[in-house]
Each structure stands twice: as structure tokens, then as C-alpha cells.
Image (cartoon, rainbow, N blue to C red; front, side, top):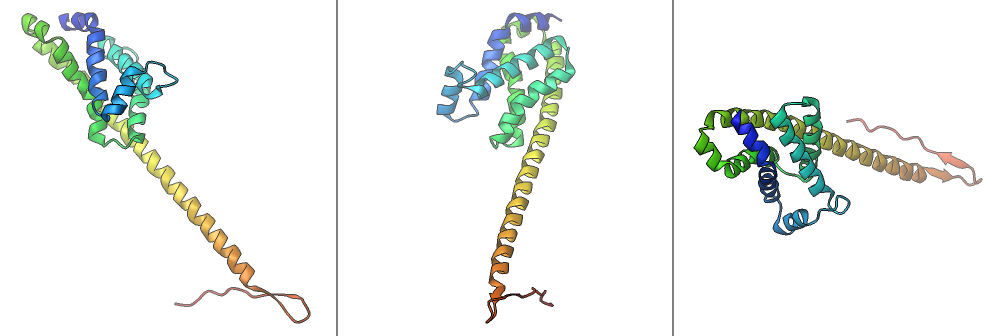
Length: 189
């Protein structure tokens, strides 16, 4: 378990590499803003993302709070799902951790022969990425359902409006100024 002690020591370096890799998926101006602005009120996306990856990293190191990792993932993945990232781009943000760990601990892995421990750690990352995919699909399903519901409401309102217009056209007054209503009839096919 030597790898885990190195991962704890180099936590800030790994997290910064991981965060930079995630930000590289955004346009240059957006990435610069997300990286430069530390105020969570001015930059909720950046703050939520960094806090989420920090908590996921802690989970991977200590293995505690499996139910909590879902909520941290949900925060990150929900943002990316709304931003129209593809499923692969969304899950890739979790897999960037592998590159960050390898980049930050390259010399330690080689010097101490930690390849087997690294593979075990990467399997945990893979499990988290699969959970991220499940969360992404749930978010996208919810978005599509909301869009479908909105389209149904929009269509219903249009039909109501058309019905009101039709009713106004079907109300006439006779010569004695009495209202005459015509019934609508369905047209046979």
C-alpha cells in the first residue's frame, strides 16, 4: 500500500493535474475563467467541480462513503450533462485521474515498482467512471423527459388557443341579436 501513501502526499499535485485536464475540455476562454476565478458565487461550475473531484479522490484513497461518492459525482456529471457533453466526454473527465496520477507519481511508480498497486487503483477509478455513466444517463433521460413535457404543454396550449379561435368564429347572432352557436362536427375520413 505504498502507492496510497504517495497519493496522499501528492494529493494537491494530482488534484491540480486532474482539474486542469477537466478544464481542457472547455473552450480556452471558459477554461481560463474557471481556473482563475476561485469565488464559488462567481464561479459555481469551477467550485463544484473542484470540490467534487477532491471528495472523489478522498473516497478512492480511503474507500469510505460509497453513497457520498454518488452525490459528488452527481454534482460534476449533472453540470456536464446539461452542457451537452457527449457521454464519452463526460465519463472521460473521471478517467483523467489516471493520467494525473501517472504524471504526478511517475518516478515513484518506477522506483518502487508500484505497477500492480497502480492497476488496482485504476480499477477503482474505472468503477467510479461506470457509476458516472449511469448518473449521466439518468440526467440525460430527465432532460429529455422535461423537454418532452414542455413540448406537450406547448402543443396543448396551441390547441386550446386554436379551439378558442374556432369557438369565436362559430358564434353568430341572428337577426334578433340572439346568439347562435354551431356545433363542431368531426370530419369522416
